[in-house]
Image (cartoon, rainbow, N blue to C red):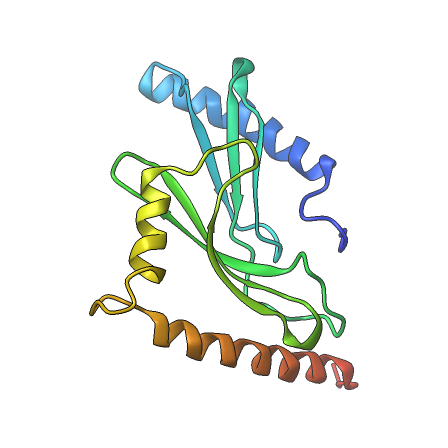
Length: 169
């Protein structure tokens, strides 16, 4: 378990071996073709990330890790956090980063993030606009984000304090 990395090279290599081996074989067998674009949504660790890596047959693969809300260590780590991943009917992917751990309970992030090397797209921009740029509309979530931004650091500090105390097993 690597706390200083979002995803170790060994873990990414294992994921690719599984996806490009048994999973790709099943896709070929079931659908008679191979995808030309590949995005993988993953929830393996508590560390959200968006990464572009080499895909099968020279293509590219976008990997989105959701992270998680778990605070199970007494010390903060910027790598830990949480995202929500959205897909539309065209299977465009947008990762909405909500939280990153850190000193003083972490921070509410609330931004659509893309893997390095992928340009923002209309779907992700529409999510950003709808959630953050329409403060006067009924659909605005500005007050929700404000409450969440206050609640997250409080809860993280509470959980971190819990993990600093001895507990019977």
